[in-house]
Length: 460
Image (cartoon, rainbow, N blue to C red; front, side, top):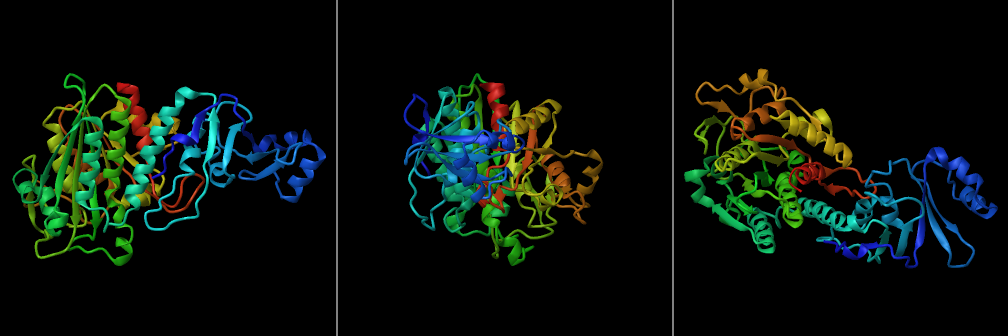
């Protein structure tokens, strides 16, 4: 984990090199103002004004130089100068023109490295100065939260099971004076039968559990944040092919998002009563595994015919949603790497977002746009609710045929959402398959900053 604190500092006029950002459409006019030596260097470096072009431009003295970046990102984008944070030499920098704005986040994350298993070449810090010191703390917290999601998702399942997720929650509880309650193993059978069933095949060391953290004054509005914590998903008896299992260490990405969002809430001291719930399991295969055709009881009292053991995430979330509802929250947010159908529909970058409240949906979408953390709303289409019909139970967990899979999964969850609560479900991928500046290949926070912006706006 990178300590971001030294990398973003107030600008008090200390010595620093400039980063000059030029938009592609302004490059020709800008080039005409440069001295012949600079124009010759840019021509030799094949800088043509395309987005992503960059160069080091000399000054008057031998040690005098500054960095040029051609960038078409808007000034509101956190990724505007992230590429510079990756490649510039160790040193101190400031933007030549204009305020830093959100770009500090990308600068910090460009220097984050997941090095648990592979040590890269040591690089010195690249410090960025900002004329907006009031934004530093928020930027540092966002960078740390994003790095937390990335680091947790990148961990191999051998190093991150239900017990390790519990330890992460315990560390937060200790840091912020929150209370932690954990229901483990066979204790779950009495109150959380779906969590128990999904996690029953795992070894004792990786026993299932429901992790609950509570924080904040009792008189504040109650908000529940829930994260799917499937630490590895084999598919259960409906076994995935090896290609489908390859990335299933990331099936706890929802829990990573929930932990990071809870940390943001507590660090900022938002005026809410936080209830964090993480159902943590491993969907394994053994003689104790739950089976296709089993009828599962639920905390809410409904019965569920299990038609696919690989549709386990919605089962554990159902019990967690039911528990959250018993405390009468006014707002419920859940994060889950829930369906391949969402990825087929929207690709890796857009979390499929479902909401039972129009105001909440509008806030989330607007916040995602403003934070450059986009979401895309899909409908809780009531006409598909009949696809969850079972001949022998109250509902099935996975309809036959796979049509509208992301929607039917959300409709399943909706059956467990507390009455009267505004609820949003983010079906997020939690992974980046292709690197971009400030965003390496691997675990990724998708939807985190959008949700944080909503909570900060409501309870800040």
